[in-house]
Length: 179
View 1 (cartoon, one colour):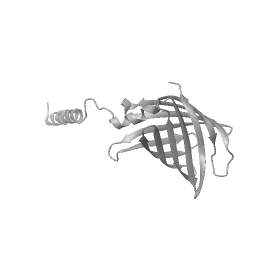
View 2 (cartoon, one colour; view 1 turned 135 degrees about the horizontal axis):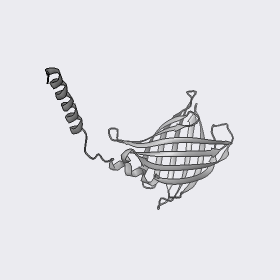
View 3 (cartoon, rainbow, N blue to C red; view 1 turned 60 degrees about the vertical axis):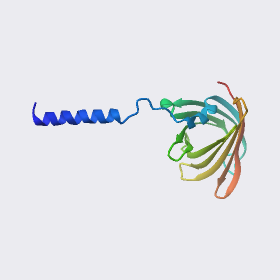
View 4 (cartoon, rainbow, N blue to C red; view 1 turned 90 degrees about the horizontal axis):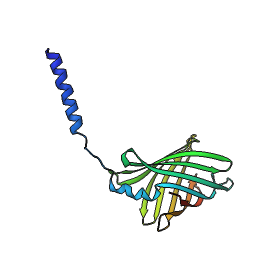
């Protein structure tokens, strides 16, 4: 074996050894993620919504399917929002940032809107606050208050939004968990 082959072999061996020692054998999700457990399952929500401060109020049906992904470190929310003559699909990723010690929501909608929220938990109440950005760059700030029944099978939620200094109720819904 020549010197170059030996050097390459030692380099490869060192890289393999370093990468195997640098990883935890069985990483586990942080216990803070358990706060999202109340959401896991299938939810059917209904109520009223209003897309803009001056827009018409309409009836909405909202289906959510929430499940753990990527070894339990994240929760994926698949959504279908039916209302105002449209069927809109969206996805959210719920997570916990152990450095900042905050729960986060990252959302993406089929109409080009994205949103970033932080969540806080207090017994049967979850509050999400943050900002949504439209495909045209427009921004809307919002606060969503969710209240769960003590058994976690029903919930109600209200979103208050603000755009260009004007506030309105963006939705009020109630719903049940089917599984």
